[in-house]
Length: 265
Image (cartoon, rainbow, N blue to C red; front, side, top):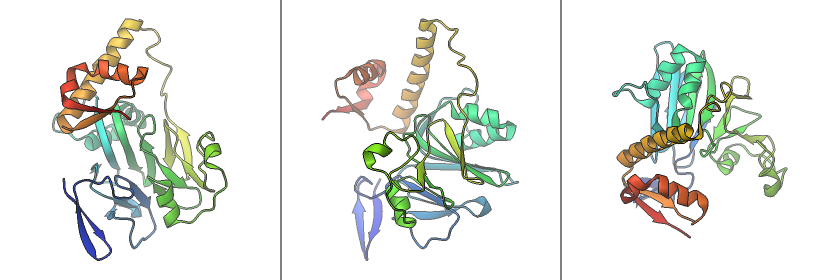
């Protein structure tokens, strides 16, 4: 779609967000901000504000008593119990109303690259996809969460304290003092600014299955994911390096090869 970006006093029309700084990103804050990049503000319950663009999907659901779930990014909901007319945000909220365990189980069946915001009892939590493809940085000194480290730093100055190469091997540390990034399988509780691990929920349930049964399960989930992505995103590109990972991916995507475009470098 055509994205209109206001640059200075001129309106520039672009055919993609590729050249827009922080495209597909977000800022979550409780502070009042005059502007954030090219984002627009969305007011959330309990005084929270989300700044974001429309470069990726954003879906939310809310109950009358203030429980709230928002998912932003791209995703494939592989859960078996979601109603046909129910959005992923609505299904997550329904799971949350059942129990925290049900909510976490539903998260485990959503593939993709996304961030999830969850409000329960007035407390905000931030989750992201299972391998952390959607980067999430947060300030240890204020209620500020961002998709990009440099974006957070532009809103709240922080000095460097680690070289980049050291920070890459330092778990949740970033090169910037008092700014951390959220690790996969953890959530950020903004009421206490603490990070807690929530996965795995139990000992590995698949260790008792045969290798063939496990591979069949992976194949079933993978094909369902590919079906959903092919339906929602008609122009998908696959990076093909020629290594084992990309060759295996192409082999497993054989039913959808005609739907995708490959590229290498």
